[in-house]
Length: 428
Length: 119
Image (cartoon, rainbow over all chains, first blue to last red):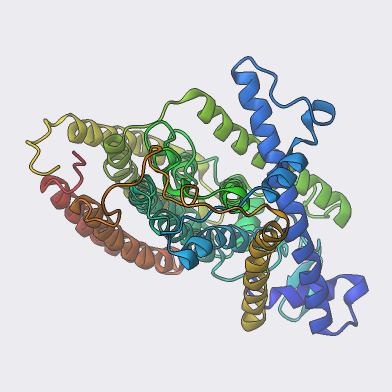
C-alpha cells in the first residue's frame, strides 16, 4: 500500500494529459485549481449554509424564513455581504487594537487550513505503485489504493487537521480578551474551558480509525474504507462517530454548547465588541468550522463519498474517472449536508446546556467512554482487520456487548459524579 | 515532496490571511467612519463601564487547562501507537491498556479531589 507525500506526483503522472509534464508544473496546476476551490467555492458554500440554516430554523419554528430577496430568498446571503461590508467598523478605544484585529483572522485561517487535506473523491482510478502505474489487481483487494481528490495528501493529515482546528480556541480567547469588555472576557474564559475539554474526546474518538487504518493520512483512511466498508458499521466506529459529532458541535460553539456566546446572559459572549465586517469574519469562521468538521466526520467514519456496502464505482474494474467522481462528490455532499442538518436540528430542538453539566459531560462521560472505546477498537481490529478473512460475526459478538458495557459504565460514572452533593461555596 | 506539500500549506496560510484582511480593507474604504466617545466606549449596559476588566478569574479554569494538557500529551502518545499497532501485536495492546489505566487513575484522582466539580 502506498500512502504519503510522493503520491501527488505519482497519480498526476497516471493521468494521460500529464504523463510527460514537468513534476512541478503538475503540482502547481493542481494546487492553483485547489486554491480556486478553497477561496471561491467554500465561502459561497458557507453563504448558502447560512441561508439553509435560516430556512430550516424558520420551518422548525413554523415561519417561512428569508423569502424577500430573490426567489426563495436565495439572494439574501449576497445582500447580507453588501450590508456587512458597508457597516461601520467600531473598535473600542480601550481595546488592544492589534489583538482585536488578529483574533477573527486567526479563526478564519484555522478553518481554511483544515480544508486542504480533505479528499472529496479520487484523482485517478489507476492504482499507483512506487515504480509506475497499474490498474487494481481484481484478485488482491487488499492492495488497492486510490489517490485522493484533495489539495495535499499529508502523511499526518488527521493530526494536522486536529492541530490547526485547535487554533480556534486561541482565536476565541484573543477575541474575548482584546475588547476589554467584561462579557467578552467571561465568554472567552468559558469558551476556552469548553473547547479544551471537548477537544480531548474529539481527538480520542479518532483513535480507533487510526488504529484500523495504520496511517494518519486521510486518503489512506478513505481507501481503507473502500476495502473494508465504512468505519461507522462497527460498534466502536459508531460510538466514535457519535462522540466525534457531539464534541465537534461543542468545538464550533453550536447550540446546545453555545455558552461562550450565550446571548441571553452575556450579550454576544466573546464577540460582543465586534461589528460590521469583523463580526462577519467570526460568522464565516463558525460556518466554515461546521463544514470542516462535517467533512472530517464524513471522510473518517462515513467512507468519504463511497456508497455503503458496495464497491461500485470503484470495483475491480473502476468506472471512468468522471463517473467515479460524480458519484463520490455527490455522496460526499449528501453526507455532509445530513450532518449539517443534524446540527441545525440540534439548534432548533435543544436548549443551552448548563456549564457544570457541560464540563461534566466531557470529562466524566465522553473521556472515559473514548478510552474504553480504544480498547474495544483493538479487539475489533484483532477480529476483523488483522485476519486474512474478516471474522465479522466474532467481532460483533465480542465488541457489541463490550460497547454497551462501556456506555453503561460511563453513564453510571457520570450520574454518580453529577448527583454528588455540591460542596459549600468557598469563593465567589 | 513532503516539503512541497507543506509549501502549499504555507501558501494557503498566507492567502487565507489575505482573504480575511481583504474585506476588512474594503470595509475600511467604503464604510462610514464617525467615531464618538460614547460609541467607542466598551459596551456594557448603556452606562459608562465601571472598574477593571482584566481581573483574576476562578482557579477552576486553570485546573481544567492543566487537565487538558495531561490528556493532550496522552493523545500525542496514542496516535503513533495507533498507527503502528498493526505491526506490533498483542503486547502493544497490553502496554497501551496499562498506559490508559495509569491515566484513568489520574482522572479518577482528579475527580475524587473535586477538580471536575464546577460549582
